[in-house]
Structure formats: C-alpha cells, structure tokens
Image (tube, rainbow, N blue to C red; front, side, top):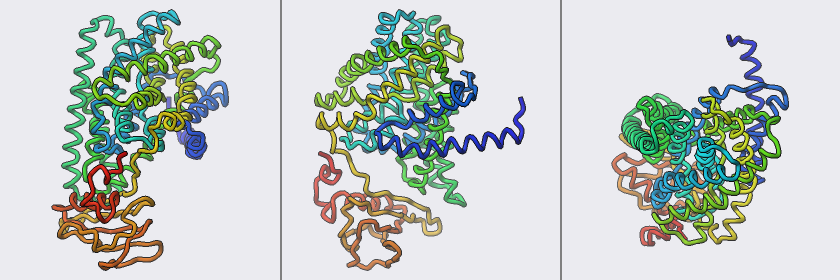
Length: 504
C-alpha cells in the first residue's frame, strides 16, 4: 500500500482538526473534573465505523502505537515528578506497583472466573489489564487536587511503575509462555525484565544528565528534544535486552527531570506538550478500535460487575496489604483505595491478546472498555469530594517558584530565570535580604512592562521575573536559597524545615 500526497493532505486536514477539537475539549473536561480520555475516546467512536465510517481494525498496529504513546506519557510523568516529593512514599508506591498488582490480579481473576465463567487464561488477562493505574489520568487529575505530598507521591510512583509488571504479565499470559513454563519461570521472567529495565533506565538517566550538563548546544530548543530522546533511548535499550522498556523510560526520565539541566522548565513544558499529543492520538485510536455493535447489555453488566469487584474488593485489599510497608492513617488508605484511576492503560493492554489472536479477546476488550468508561465517570469527578469528606484535602504543596536555567559557557555560570508566583513569600522581600551565596547576583527584575536594575532596597513583588547569575560551583546553593525564601519568607533560614516546605 502506498501513501501519496493526496492522502497526506487528507490526513493533515482530519488530523489537525481532530487534534484542535481535542485540545479545546481539555477545558470542558477540566470543568467537569473528568480525565479528558473520556472525550477523546468518544471522539474516536464518533469517527469510527459506527459514526463517520473510518475503519480501523488492526490490533497489531494499535498495540505498537499504544506502547509508543505510553512510553512518551511515562517519560513526561518522570520528567515532571519532583523526587523530593515522591521519595518519602516511594516504598509504598513501589509496593502498590508490585505486590498490590499481584493481589489485585488474583482477586479480579477469581471474580471473573466465578461471576463471568471465564476460563483462567482470560480471567487472568482481565485481572492483569485492569489492575494497573493510568499515569496520564493520575498526573492530570491529582495534580489539581490539593493533597499531602505522601499521598501524591505514592499515587504518582505507583502509576509510573506499575505499567512495567502488568505489560510483562499480560504478554506472558497472552502468548502462552506462562502456561508453557509455569508460574516459577514466569515470576523469574518478570523479575528479570523489571530489574534489567530499571538498571538500564538509571544508567541512561545518569549518563544522559552527565552529557547534557557538559553539552553547549547551539540552540535552546535542542535541549528539550535531546532530553526526551534520552528517555526514549532508555526504552529502546531495555527493549533490545528483552527487558522492561517502561521501567527504563520512567526511571531515566525521573533522573533527568530531577537533575539541574539547562532549560529545565522549557524541557518540562515540551514534554508535557508531546505527552498531550500522545494522549490525544492514543485515546482517539482506541475509540476507533471499538466496535459499538458488539456492546450488549451482557457486556455492560460484565464491565460494571468486574468494576465493582475491582473498586470495592481488589483495590482496597491491595492497599491494605501494601500499607504494611508504610502505615498510613485509615482515612488516607481509604483515599488511596478510591484514587486508583484507570485510563487508557487497561485498554492498551487488551490489544496484546487481540494482536495475538487469543480466543475471546474481543469480548475482553469490550468489557475493559466499558469498565474504564464507567469507572472514570464515577471516580474522576468525585475525587475532590472524597478528599474533603475524608479530611485529606488542602494539604498539598503550592508550586510557587519555577526556575529556568541557561548556560553562560564563557563565564562558567548559569543564568537563572525565576517567576515570583502568586503565593510565593518572596513578595515583600528586599534584594539585600536574599543573602545569596558569594558570587551569585540578582541582575534584573522585570515587572510588567518595566525593567528594573535592582538595588539593595528594591522590594520584590508577585509576578516579578528575576534574572539571577550564579557561578556553577554555587548554583545549587543559590537555587536552594531562593526556594527557601519563596516558601518561608525572609526568615526562612531560621524556620524549621517542615514550616518551609508547607507540610501540614
């Protein structure tokens, strides 16, 4: 099959139009408190065979494109995750992504076998596909719900790490390798893929950070592209070793996103934009893959029934077991149980048995599609209300200071660009009270249309853009000092750390 210019013109016309509509739909989804995936899935269904008649039945292509989109989404999640916020809860997040997944798979598989009469292969596939939380849904919803750092950290770590084991499990079961080699070898394969993938991701992240700190690229726009390519290099390198590319891409991105690199803010913005594009394409494609004519009352009942098992039994039980690693108050455990957001990941995972031609895979795909839609409609809009009822809302950290860095190679220094946010306590602080490390200097203040050369008594205000020159030997200390004052005001040096961080 050839692809000519006329087809390209049609593709660009339809593709750009759909993408623009999807971007505008983000505002609607934000107002409704829903992950935008529902609107994108609906757009795919409308464009598909039951709507405008665009046919798409290639499960193998959907599988490949779905994995590519998930890799980009995980890269963005790692690049925009703050390690200092995740670190206190990383043990709980890792437990939820491994032990919690195992518990959930067993419970859902048992429920599917008993309630729906599915054979064990299909029951395990259904349990594995629906047990993973979705990184895109978690990152988009939870970051606008004010929560304690330990809860946000646990949920973000879980969603970033749990794709890897579920992908391996679904692949082994769908291809028949699990049945052929038995449970011990299957578990060994999962451990191998996760361990090697994690090591590859950490190596690429550390090595990539070393290179990027020393590379003087000719254009600032090349830095974001290079960083995103490094994260995807981790995915490809791990896949070449038959290890988990998803573990590699997330950990590589996490290392790079928490390293002091040039143009870090621009890199995060670029990654966020690319991830949005990947989400839009992924969800629309999955909507196209659905055949609405196959959805029956039995399919809806099965999806709702398994969703109830997942929501009311499997998820709470997995959270309770994992709480042994890091005990939390009961109200926080209850919120973790409710906030296990599902999204595109379960649907993407079901393309694996579809592409492998597993008997009954089409029915499973439809059940999972219904489950995701219903589950998202129930959990997404209610998260803020549940957080308030459980008394866990209102304790989230406010991100009131963003720092952008550009290298000044001839001076062996960095130019830091900062914006004083609406809640930053830099407001009202005089320049002389900053007490920056020796050699660092606040060079310019941009206030609206006015450019100020600061003096000792110049008072900083909300909305100011600051340009700070910091020698590389003290750049980290300079940035740390500015963040301390932003959180704690001019007396930050003498305040306890908990007060500076805004913890409840």
